[in-house]
Length: 94
Image 1 (cartoon, rainbow, N blue to C red):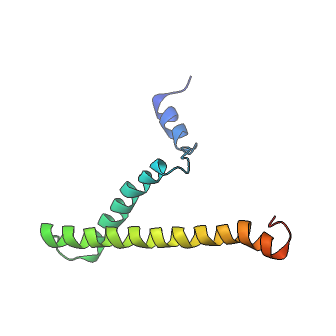
Image 2 (image 1 turned 90 degrees about the horizontal axis):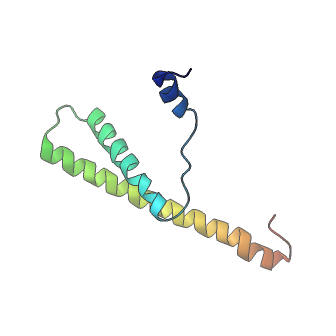
Image 3 (image 1 turned 45 degrees about the horizontal axis):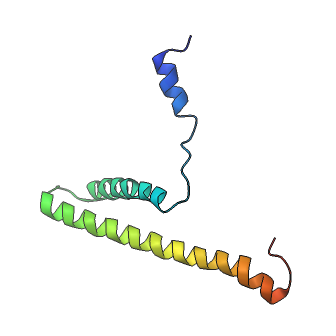
């Protein structure tokens, strides 16, 4: 017989399947917010609401911009390797 604690522990051993659709990329937002809040909380000596919220919002924005740029660059590299490079060399990319 499986207890409730064992069922909860077993749920951590099977990852959630997340598709690669545009809507599934929204799961990135809570992760970025959590990372930014924890990072800023460890870097400041005293937490005051306005400066902390402003610095955290700037960090969230910069993380999202960097991730977007990295995704575009990687998409461009993948497009070049799978579409353009085989046409140039006359062979398959794989």
